[in-house]
Amino acid sequence: MTLTLYNTLTRRQEPFETLVAGKVKMYYCGVTVYDYCHLGHARACIVWDVVRRYLQFIGYEVRYIQNFTDIDDKILNRACLEHSSMEAVADRFIKAYFEDMARLLVKEADEYPRATHTMNGIQRLIHELENKGFAYPADGDVYYPVRKFSEYGKLSGRKLEDMQAGASDRVNVEDPEYQKKKDPFDFALWKAARPGEPAWESPWGAGRPGWHIECSAMVRDRLGDTIDIHAGGADLIFPHHENEIAQSEAVTEKPLARYWLHNGMVKVDGEKMSKSLGNFITIRELLDRGVDPMAVRLFVLTAQYRTPIDFTDEAIAAATNGWHTIKEGLLFGYQYGRLLGWEVGTALLLSKPHSLIPETVERFQETVNNDFNFPGGLAVLFELAKELRHGRNILVHEGKIETSPEELHRQWQTLVTLAGVLGLEAKPEVKTSTKEGLSDAEIEAKIQQRQEARIAKNFAESDRIRDELQAEGITLIDSRDGTRWHRN
Image 1 (cartoon, rainbow, N blue to C red):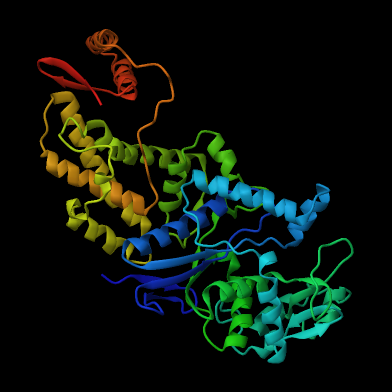
Image 2: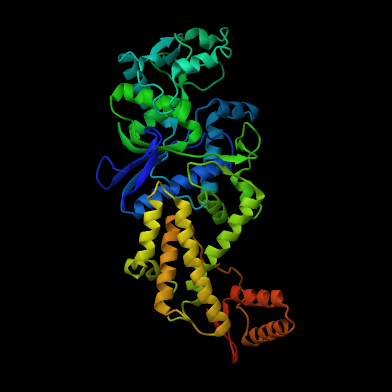
């Protein structure tokens, strides 16, 4: 089973081969920290989190770097509106980012470089570009001469002559920045300081870096000249990633990345979700409405990662229902394991790879190996969860099992393991109440109430009482001889 990936650079699906056997160097272009993250950010962070988890699952050692853009006009504008500083705004929203991602169970990267902490590397890279004739100063600014890089456009597939024809009506010749450039397509590597803005000293005068050079420098400083995977949203292909390639490869004369991977956008009514359009919902707003974080993960993973995905109330409702099915399966062992003679509540549950179902794991891996086909992987999880639901129903309603306890244990362990690869987790709720729990008499009384509801064919009430007892750690087993119960 060979992992194959769609490479934006080559426009085809290719076998995955790393620079060093068994190791992956991966960089994800992270967020610009001027506001709370929205669902579009959640999709990207979840997708690349699962990519990293899956690579580790199939045996790779992954070094995963994700940056924060903490120098940007949007950050400066917010700081001005709040009579604050760029640093204070960035720090606030970096903290919020970690809070949101923790709720979504997105694992932390190995390192989070910030542009403001990479200033020496940024200036060094600009200096090297200048020495090679790929940078020129202009009144305190420094620009990259795009036409000098013969492969410009190889990632996006855009040609300068086509872009030039379409841009003729949009060029403002009175723009001071335009007048500094030797060519309209040249982009800024360094921007001269403006009054009232933070600035750093440099050989070209006080100023701050352009956006594109920041990522080139952070990749090089943390991972070297060439990496295995460079990831980001599809909206970054041009100009950001195109410009990264032009900057980095002009200096190193080596490929910046072997594989360029891009996730599709989240759309609302057919339009990309973005702050500029005002059609976004923040992660915390969505979760504070009561949407389960795992339902959000499921919503993201039900679509192929490269395709757009539409955010609707119906889509979230469907993801929530899907999560309930998988959650039931994940909780099966905690609720019924002792009854079946398992060892429950210890690390033993996940420490025995030999207790997984190899055919199921192989099918999961074969599916996901096709360009990270996470929807196909989810289908395998749903099969396992439904098998466990069937086993639970037989156990609860007939007081017996059709499948051996050992096979149920293998099904459950396999589900928990594969769900963990996708970052889907469920654990029994830990009660914080000081109440000791229901007495035997109280339990018997509730069972009698449930029996009366069943006789009256009020099955909704019957299920409610059963679920209420389950929440108290009481499992009911129905049989022809009546209802038995035990404490979990």
